[in-house]
Length: 326
Image: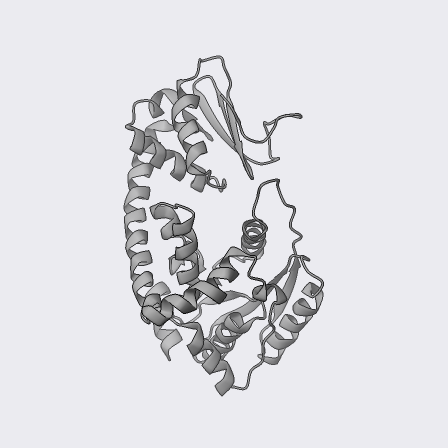
């Protein structure tokens, strides 16, 4: 079976592996869960599902019940996680929900388990185009690797049409998220209106953009390795030493800062704010204590130490406005 071969490429021998599927109840994750259920006995897989309910729409409760029931039909236990989303001013609702969802899933993951996501070739096309339109760099273009830590995306080479055909062959139903039809959301606009036009002209769009994403991921690995080597001298506990950062070339300094924020789970800043951190903040007077804020994060300098915090976790203080003070 194709999925078994793909999983072996990512994690090696399957026997005894423990898989936890992020299960929305939609077509993609239902196809993934059903296919894994067919492999379970043959490879003695541990298999369960997690459904995250953000309570963002009236149908959320019904979708959670439907997901749990459909998983039960497949013989897979499914736990529903209540994870409401609290928006920070200026933050995208889609990005906020994604961050909460990944955090909730990781928190429920058991030792030795893989978290398996149903993202497929069409999802990768949408993500890559969104990142390009946002002016993302290599890290953004490589944001959905097939394997990242305990996360697995085995369906990335698979077009969504093949997943739907699989569901029809097995007479399996799924739930449709009503918000997927709302093209006010950027991803839906691309999926519903832009990508169909691009496919008319470039039918192999999914394959070629997937190749670009893979090349970006390869380049990002090299950038991360370089940043890790430089961080050895720059890291001081949870902070960075400003005097060390100042010795790096500008591009190296920005690469190190991105990697440092990533390793701490801090949301990435836009390019303007990253340039402020890498430039004026590091050049400020020793006693100035400047800070820079963006949705979900705050970076503050205290003397020769640079500290980063998730929004609301520490530092800030009452009355500080969104933005930056240098």
